[in-house]
Image 1: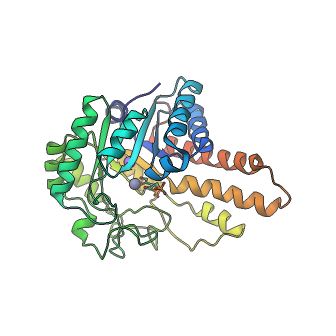
Image 2: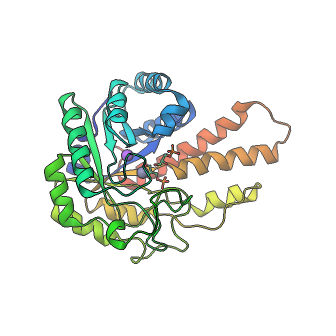
Length: 328
Ligand code: G3H
Ligand code: 13P
Ligand code: NA
Ligand code: ZN
C-alpha cells in the first residue's frame, strides 16, 4: 500500500525507529528493496533522483512502483523524489504518483551553488504549500552537505558547491532550523553534519570532529517534533570495498558513516536515512566477481541476480539495525 512520508515518519517517531531511504533506478533495485522488506516486515521509502527519472523514464518508474505495490501488498511504500531542484521537478513527481518530494533549496536550482537562506525558505515554502494541497509530503534541507575535513561540498567529484565552504555552511544551525521549519512547514528536515554523497566521505574512521552527530542532538533539542533526515549515510563497508578491489576494481581506501553513529542519530530524532552508495557497491561487487570469475558468462541475469541478492542483504541489514524491521 502507498503511504506518505509524513504518515510513515510519524509512526517511526512514535515507535522510535528510523527508515532507510534507498535509491531506485531499475527493476533489480526495486525488487532487492522489496524482498528485504518482505523478509523482515519493514515499511519502505524508495526514492528516485532526477538522474534516476531520466535514466528509467517517469512512466517506467511510476509503473514499477505500481507493480511493486501490487506484488508486495503488505508492505507500506513511500515513493519519494530525492533532491528536487525546483517546483517543476517536485510537481511532476507528484503527478507520477510520488507521495513525497524533497525540495533541496540548500543549493541554487543548478545544484552547484550554495543558496541564500531567503531563497531556500521561499522556494521550500512554496513547494510545501502546493504539495500539501494534494496530500503529498515535503522534505527540505538546511545546510550544505560536504566534508568538514576538506571544506568541500560533494567531496566525491568536487563538482558540488563552488569554492571552500565554512563550518557554518557545512553544519546546520539549530536556531535557524527552528525558524526554517516554522516558515516552510516541511514534514521532514534534512540536516548537514559532515556527511557527503558518494563513497569518499572520510579519509579515516570518523570521530566527532568530522562527523558532527552532536549537531543532530542540538537540532533535535530545538525542534523535537520535526523528523530529521540524514543524507550521505552510506557506511561504505570495508568488505564491499574489498570485494570490488579483489575483482579488478580500483577504489582507494575510504570510510563512510558507521551504522552505530546512524543508530545514535535515530535516538535523537533522525527518522529517514538516505543510502545509495552502499547499494551500488553491493551490486557492483557481484558484477565484478562474475565478470572475473566466470569470464565466459554473457547472460545478464547471471550478473543481475547475485547483484540483486547482495543489495537485498544490505537493505535487510539496515532495516534490522535501524529498527524498521517488524514495523510494516
Ligand atoms: O543524491 C545522490 C543520490 O545518490 C542519487 O545519485 O543523482 O547519481 O542518481 P544520482
Ligand atoms: P550516499 O551516497 O551516502 O549513499 O547518500 C545517498 C543520499 O544522500 C541520497 O540523497
Ligand atoms: Na531525499
Ligand atoms: Zn542526498
